[in-house]
Image (cartoon, rainbow, N blue to C red):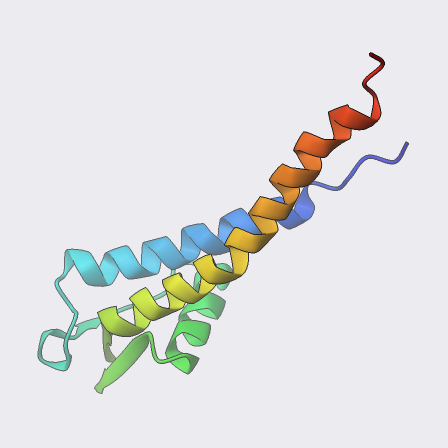
Amino acid sequence: MIAASPVPSIVAGLVMRARRRIASHFFVHHATSAEDAVAYAPQNHIEQRQFEKMQGRGVVREAGAGRYWLDTAAWQAESDARRRRLIPIILLLVLIGAAIPLFFYKG
């Protein structure tokens, strides 16, 4: 049997970590409105890419002069959308996991 590669789960973990670090930067500095915008410099390539994606989705907004702020409503909406996509997948995996032992039951 061929073992599944751990690479996709590692990449997903790195992406989520980068997103949390970006959001926490803005939350720590209370940069949740244009008036409270702060400077931000990504620490690595993954953070840079996620920062650009968050800007593209309107989660991180620029206030001008290299200062940014986190739109909490957009952040929450994106989080809710992600959850809506993942819950059916998780439920399906749980049902499959519960059904597999039934195929091997010898009673």
